[in-house]
Amino acid sequence: MEKGLLVKYGEIAIRGKNRYLFENQLIASIRKNIDELDPGHFIKKEQGRFIIYNKNGETDVDGLIERVKVVYGVLGVCPCIISKVQDFEAMKSLALDYFKETYPILAPGTTFKVLTKRADKKYPMESTEISAKIGEAVLEAFPHLKVAMKNPDITLHVEFRNDAYIYSNIIKGIGGLPAGSSGKGVLLLSGGIDSPVAGYLMEKRGISLDAVYFHSPPYTSERAKEKVVDLAKRLSLFSGGKRLYVFPFTEIQLHLYDHVAPEKLTILLKRTMLRIGEMIAEKNGALALVVGDSVGQVASQTLRSIHAIESAATLPILRPLAGFDKQEIIDLSHQIGTYDISIRPYEDCCTIFVAKHPETKPKTSIIENIDRRILPEILPMIEKALEEMEIYDL
Image 1 (tube, rainbow, N blue to C red):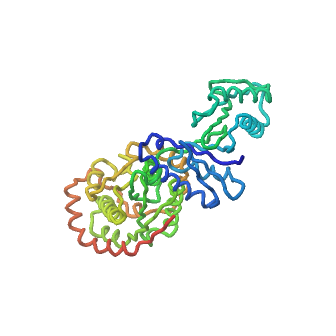
Image 2 (cartoon, one colour):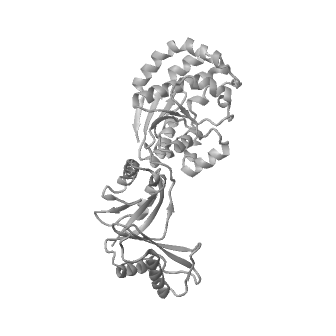
Image 3 (spheres, one colour):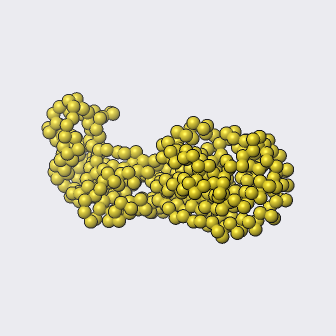
């Protein structure tokens, strides 16, 4: 008998012949997180489950829970005990010991049930019979408890697979698909609230995201860059790693500032960012760009502005926050742990040169004409900056 962590996954279970690819991707993401805790942990595949335990000694179950429950694709994690012996009397004794250790003090009238699953249908006892006999043993030891088949206070799970597992606590994961299982994209990551949430939602659907941040020193400080690095680190916790490109944007931004009417500047800046993001994506085999737009939230996110901006790119542009209001985005940023980082008082390049009265109904044809005129001037600057940008593997 030893302690471990049973990991449940959701959507992967309904995959067909390529299911193993999703499982392997999820294992890789989990491995990245738990190796930082202890590289001695072993991840074992079971039918519809992963089991994690430490081959070199005592398993730090609490530490594993915190690092595994946040990984995309994990539906739930369960501290469990593992037994290679599946003799029923031994299992009944083991289940009773687990129950006593886990619930030493229970109020009179506390309800419970035993739920048994047998992956091996050749086991000599039916699941309902196993549950009934283990339940009887629990009642003998805890006569003040009551059995409840619907909505009990405690459900004692007993699973017979290659090994046997006993657990009762299911800690909810974030679900979704493993990062990378749906392809690769590039996230335009600012230091604000919205774009990290957009990245989180797209990675939850299995898209592995590199991130690009547009840095404009001295107008944006090193603290602003550090904030974005911290945001990327936080997002990497869910996906098992992330690459961040810090693109030096000052020269390009100043050129646009000098050659574009103030009310059109934000539109042209965002077109240029999309174009740069697409260049990075094409070099890395990424198939989409991800942005934090919420329709109507600011001047550059009206439908006309979005239309005028997105023609700068040929790759699909994913906007997972398009239908969210600001409070919904803030609530989700709290949930994923990016809000407190995002509100640090260090501005990004998009907030430095904002016009007092930005255009909200730009004509795409006019914007494209301006873009064609200035593009030959800024392309050499972009190529130079691509060679100079910093790369962080997080």
